[in-house]
Image 1 (cartoon, rainbow over the protein chains, first blue to last red):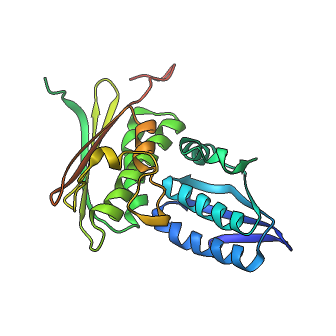
Image 2 (tube, each protein chain N blue to C red):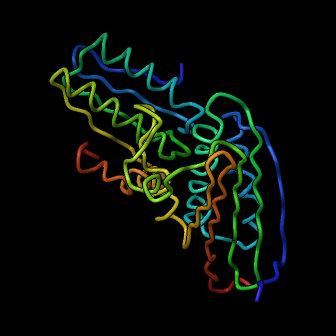
Amino acid sequence: MAITCTGEGRVRTAELRGEVDHHRARGLMRELETLVDTTAPRELILDLSGVTFMDSSGIAVVLRTWRQVKALGGELRLAGVPEQAGKVLRAAGVERLVTVE
Amino acid sequence: MKQASSNEALIRFPSCSANEGFARATAACFVAQLDPTLEEVNDIKTAVSEAVTNCIVHAYPDCLGLIQMRLRLFEDRTVEIVIKDTGVGIADVDQARTPLFTTGGEERSGMGFTIMESFMDTVKVRSRPGRGTTVVMRRRISRRMGVPG
């Protein structure tokens, strides 16, 4: 399990750790999809404080999860974004769609 | 006139996704001899990761192929990274470089070339359908105060 989930009801936090690249992206997407499908969160916080590297595969992970959460009427937020991941996310304009804390 | 490099390395590896991390770590180690800032190292790692992932996802979509990465340092503290494949090639390079354009489906963001361009000083792409693609990226590493060389 690459993601640690906390919270209850419809407010959940998913903590991602390690490197988020194409090698790991599919597994992360699958885990997040399961989390969204089973909990239908009103608010899902992706905690990226443990992410040591992210490339554009991480953008796809965030945007795919954002679409799934939004489709169920919820909101996605990003928290603890490290500098390197933040630079990648900003290059794609992700902060225009997703709230970054 | 061709610029002479002061150091160089050449590695070749198969297009399996586990090698994305290997390639960017190798590039980071090579660049370390210029004592770059953390941001410079991270920018180079990110650009290498994008270029290598493109080879894995697009150049060799249904098979494993070879990826070659050549790293060179020049006297003016420029790092040149050449990532080359002999895969399917890109019919329209300008289209491939357009932000959000992807043929990789929902699992890809279409931001790979955009990130290479914004994190490196120059990015050149040469490609021929059926013959492969070569990406040449350059980044000049800043000289830090109080650091010799």
